[in-house]
Amino acid sequence: MISIAESEVFAKRGQLFMGWARMLLIASGILALSYVGLTLLGARRFQKDSALLLEKQIHANGQHRAQPSKLPVKEGDVLGRIEIPRIGISVIVLQGTKSQTLRLGVGHIDGTPFPGEEGNIGIAGHRDTFFRSLKDIHKDDEIILQTVSGVSKYRVDWIQITAPGDSGIISSKTESALTLVTCYPFRFIGAAPERFIVHAQRE
Image (cartoon, rainbow, N blue to C red; front, side, top):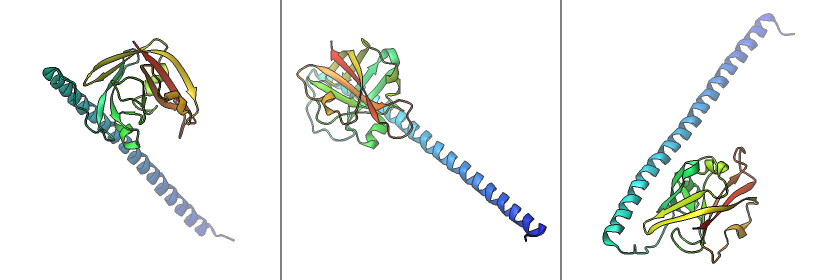
């Protein structure tokens, strides 16, 4: 049988343990929020610096009045900027879709034409950062794609929800089009089970 003194000792130990557990949870929460904040801050700074770099390249290309030379493109290179004025999207397009790349911007999908070229250009982005506002996009919304070589304008003609492995959505076509891809549902916690597709025809 446990004595009153022993019961008090166990109670104090339990309170001490709960106190340490609470402090650990608070510290973990602070660290997680700090990491997210620093990541978002870094991405915002990268966007600003990349936008300035793109503007300088556009200006330099205009001064020389020549087509930019086609150098080998590697993961993370700046390719242009995509804007959807009605829903407030303006984001730098980078080469590739690796995790690190999509933390900094939206990514050109390998195997599709590069921004500014003919064909069905594929661009992917995270639903909880740069492509969050795609949930509000409508048919006939205008999409502007700016590259060093010029500006291309597109008009949304359909929106679709599909399975992750449906590669036919961004398959090569003769049409001049733009396909945006992000995860769906937008408020889903964890790895989303579907993809949200926005298709637009060039004007």
